[in-house]
Image (tube, rainbow, N blue to C red; front, side):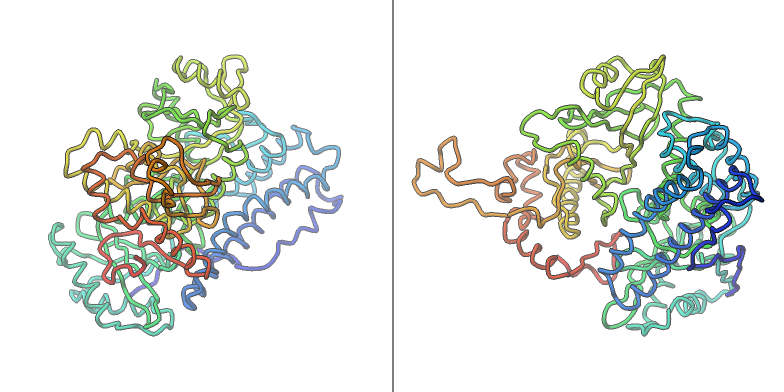
Length: 598
């Protein structure tokens, strides 16, 4: 094993020294002080982000899964906290000069000069933009006040690799696997390390058969830090063959008997699923981000860069890259905004681009009955998803404000709907449509449309996964609320994912009940219910009547998921969650040890 260190680590803890910029400094002009303040505040964010990330190893070692979930939430919320702190400190520094655009333009130039050629300078620029946009309430893009590059990719300048461990090929795969697991032992006892070594070697040998076998291996390269998420840790790297590189992901668990390997893959599709936009963010103690993103892009070539930034916990940079990608697409393609496929929703106006794989969601002004949620309820649901364990079943929805798009890029149908039903969120300025607030998500094929176009065997598989999606969400304390097929989508890899969040809630907000027995025979066959129903009441036995599954599909559903139609399942799960039990849904199939939560 050869260690390759390509970047100098930054301090993990401690506060930035800001006295030179937060007090009147006669040796520095206000624009320089402003630039220094924003730069130092981003350093403070990075230090706190890394400190939380580093705690993941301890959570894994001590099996503190509740603490790991709390860390994940804290790290997600950290960015906005630091931005608001920064704005407050800027107000103290600049006073009456706080809104002087010329001052901010000069500060922007000093800020860029200070960044130089740092690997993660795009992260610094995005932070500057977050502060200036929030303070000026910028509509569209103001190149005088923010960094507005759209053509350059965030990793185009990266020529180095992240810190890696390299395992040169010796002809003895078992010995390499032995060394690999020893290097990632964390000082913990193993349940049976030699069995894990054999399994890792056997899995690699079997999976590389389609690439010519292990004799084509040149070496293994593994990113130094482990990638933690929920109750698992992943060794992430690649196997360098003579003519190509393939991913190498090794999933580690730490149950009571001791650490063990649960899964190994060298397949791009399986590795891509672990890094999916429908999953929670990894905690990996990376000294720099852009080079890690470029490394991952090399083994996951179909994964958009913005999703790699997101899955590493850099959600704001992911938003920046998503916006840049859409902007570049509109510049180089005559694509237009058209209605998204599927049944029109009562809460959101949803549109898309034919040749770009995202959907845009704008909250309607009013919601038709029976919807009783408010605008704030909807926004709270999306925020809940943002900070929650998504279990591979919830789309990562990115919230945007004050975006501009050319009017002539909208179909008449979309433009009419937005101007008539979303007046609180959209306005027209000259030849531009300004959208004050929207969400952007990866586009999925609605489940109802998918089932209508595929054959019986694929219907069966997807109906089973639909039930599994409901189960996975329940295990992470999520009740979708509206289980209609139209609210679920099917990903490119054939995975069912929920994307309609306006009625989503925790299990604790629901009262799961059996349907009361009718007192008289005529009550059971009447048009009205004979029992009281409160807003929080849910009757699982009634799910089959409105899921939208055909009789054969419902039969398939019942074969595997009949317990989901009982109040006992939901109430039992509520009790276990309330008692502090943490369930983790494996982000892969083929677990060697299976799942004990069902």
